[in-house]
Image 1 (cartoon, each protein chain N blue to C red):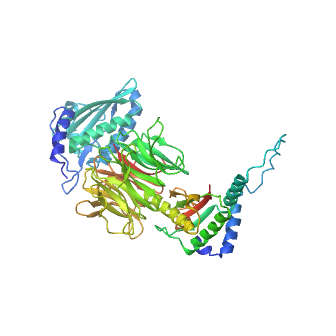
Image 2: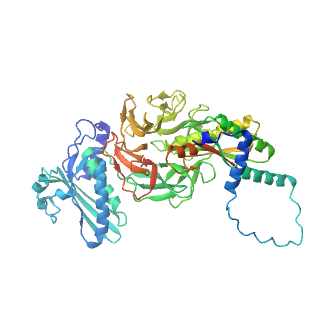
Image 3: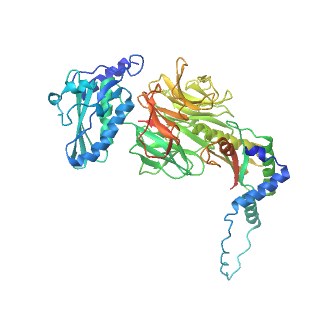
Length: 432
Length: 174
């Protein structure tokens, strides 16, 4: 799908700035019949001194991961490379025919240098066919955070080829299951560089807050499940303590409201409030039924929710102008759950239980109702969450045994496990 | 399925609850050596007030006898079977016999399905038991509910038998 004209107008000067006036690469069509991944060669980065080597290895791992997960590139196997390992860093010193011979359309070269406690990286992107430098970037990060440098460069590559923001400098919040404890972790997009936000007891259903540095979640720390917001090194802030249980906090796209589910008496309803929990009011008002798992539309005017009002859990669209009359969105099966509304607006990803009792991921098109299956025959797959740019989905899969976090494209391609340590992880939320 | 195997008469069930749960909570089985006697206090303490002593006895009795699973459910269901209702009748009688006791009903689900829905399903299961006890004359103020969803399994297994054991309400005294 094409980016909107407005988005292109907005992004064009940015891209121009980033590429210092180099010629623009053709725009890659990310989805649809015209899509063809761009063959790209990413040789190992050159460490300019021995003390840059450990950081270079971490950087390299992260850059290759990002380029692979982006699903717009075909990252070429280094074993096939023909170029001299000591080949230079400028267009004049590169033998482009050797890169053409291995099928590369694009070539990424990186040099890394240590400067005190900093790591300085310079990335150059070359078009193999023209032999010209298309992009040159310099960026500095703390020496202890080489993956951050890789994510910065990966986003620049993504933006260069798609004119869209990349997803690689965003964050995940998710659960680490350890014994009886459910810990809240906040990490880089790939599950790495994680910090523990809440450690002891039961903590569930995290959402990355708009600042990208704190997480809102349900915690039993006071004995009953309430909503809190917390960031590393600061005391937790109680947002909602009402009814029997508050869950599933979701931030509006502009960050100015929260939505959540509140169990009270014999029903669970959707509520809205200010981000600090004030001015709370019910949005749905069915007694007995469960209304849960709100996910905001990018326009901030609608919510996708789960409701049991027709007997089984199904997805509904609820307009905040007319919340008493939600539109049912799913009709197949009797267990449709965990909507995640794409920030691009067109799709809602969800978990469904199929006729064989397997849990898998699907999308439903908001306008046409067309359902597309994303996972099949690979364990149980659940709890999808769209990347902030709407192109990728993070989810939980049991295909390798214990629950792990995976990523794939919005149409289910390029499924891969995140490179996390061993352990049980689930219910990821992908936020800013 | 545990449900088929515990088709007991009311009296037999009550006995089973008392003996089984009594055992389960009188750990350790091997008794530690008796604690040394308390130091002799020169001045006798005044006897505790009647209400507080009755409360303690009620709480102790309930903790001993009525802690544990009280209802089992089918997948994605929150309705009480005839057998669950019998167990709740026994519980209601105990609560009437110990009028100051206060209980917490915890609803649980199996690991199947999604986390948030399971939390609300567990809450529904706990509320169903509370409503049934209320209908039997127990004041709702004496009963709290909480849901742990799928995060407090009785059986850590991943098969259908474990799942069946985990779709439950548990009662504890507070």
